[in-house]
Length: 230
Image 1 (cartoon, rainbow, N blue to C red):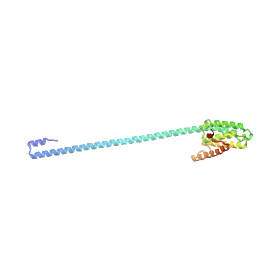
Image 2: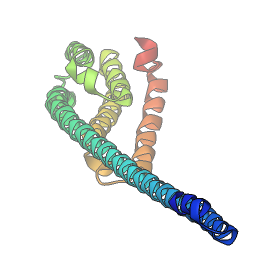
Image 3: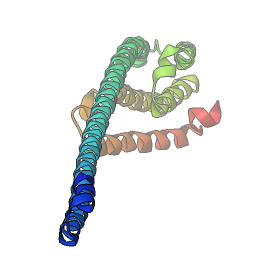
Image 4: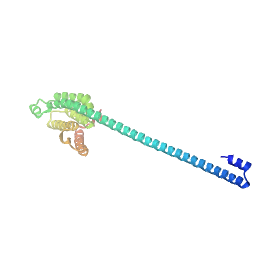
């Protein structure tokens, strides 16, 4: 604030000059105060804008980070799912490969119960019991380990039918019936036969048919399932 005019007015001027100088000083003070207030307000607004701009940029960066994080999580879950599916596919293929080898081996044993051998009289109690031992050995080998429960039960029923064979026609029919059920179970395990290309509901229905036929045979033989019989 400039007091020079006011001092000069006091020294040389009239009362009116003094009053005018005082008014000028007051207005000058009001102007300076108003100007400083406006300047402070402008600075405050600029700082507020800078703050808002900074917060906006921070929010954008946060959204980018969260979006990138979601992408990384999604990518990781996708790759993990792909890895699991690939692993499952490889295990399934290996599983089927083992089953094909083991099932072909056990099926070759059933040649001994062909109709011509029964008619020729070469199918004896000794030969069927020897075959029953092979079936039992298979049940407790890799083949039985990789087989479905119903297939192991069918193998056990076939084994029992072979063991109790007494060279009668009725006993032979039980062996043939057991072999047929065992064959259907083996084919079902490898996706062959009627089960191939069917829906899960149709597969379940087909396995249920095998299970019902197996129960009838088990009832005739007077045996329980493999699990119950040990």
